[in-house]
Length: 220
Image (tube, rainbow, N blue to C red; front, side):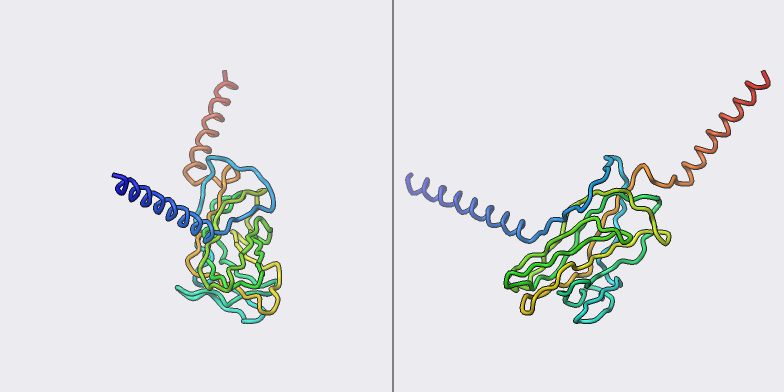
């Protein structure tokens, strides 16, 4: 009986240890997105998910050159202030976005105490940041996740463009990171949305109806 109880206790302890290790691994493999400003958020906002960073997006590394992310690939390795990756222009049915959510993957070769801080820009306005960690030159893949809200940003050039810009230069021997294809970004919009054609039709019909009632009252 004692042996049976001891074995069950050992199994329970092992299960707890595995759960804790899994939770630790999960938290270590994800980097949170931090907001740089505060704006209004509405629970009934519409969210459009757009591909970024993704294949075809342009990037520039001061030391490794510029190019576009290949399908299933990643940017050049980046460690210099001003290195960036930028999306195409996304057309959205709104005149103001107020939230951004991230699901981005990067390969981390940082070490020696070095980190990289990346700003997230929407139409050239910095709205968030993510600090990518020293992983002792591990070469593992990590994710940036989270949602931030900010003051409304209007479209530029007919739409919205997202950019990641490195804010610090890593010292020699401190490693680097690369952003990978397959990222997803959410952009939210609510009260500032441009009405859909059906909504415009209903609004116009309503105004015409009110106009007709007003004319009848005038005749009476």
